Amino acid sequence: MTFPETSWTILAEATLNGGESEKAALGKLFERYWTPISSVMRARGVPSERVEDLTQDFFSP
Image 1 (cartoon, rainbow, N blue to C red):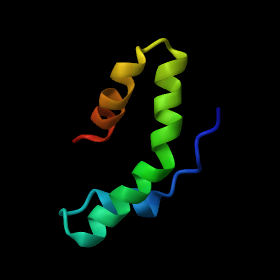
Image 2 (cartoon, one colour; image 1 turned 45 degrees about the horizontal axis):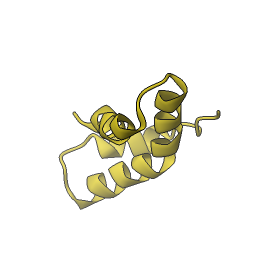
Image 3 (cartoon, rainbow, N blue to C red; image 1 turned 60 degrees about the vertical axis):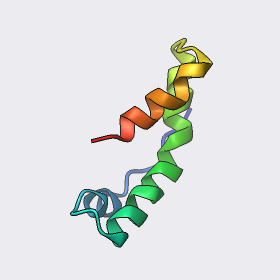
Image 4 (cartoon, one colour; image 1 turned 90 degrees about the vertical axis):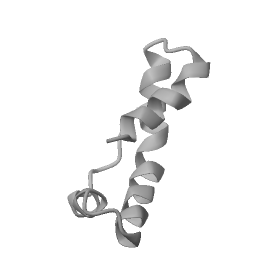
């Protein structure tokens, strides 16, 4: 399992004030990290019905 290289520029932009560019940056982070994060949870035995909720929680402030 491989995680994508972190783009610190996108991460910094996603944590700003919640405008359109911040939302777009957060969307990019979701796209890059959703699968790797949910895969880790599945590998650790998290029930499949909980994986989606817990992955969303990972991205919540």
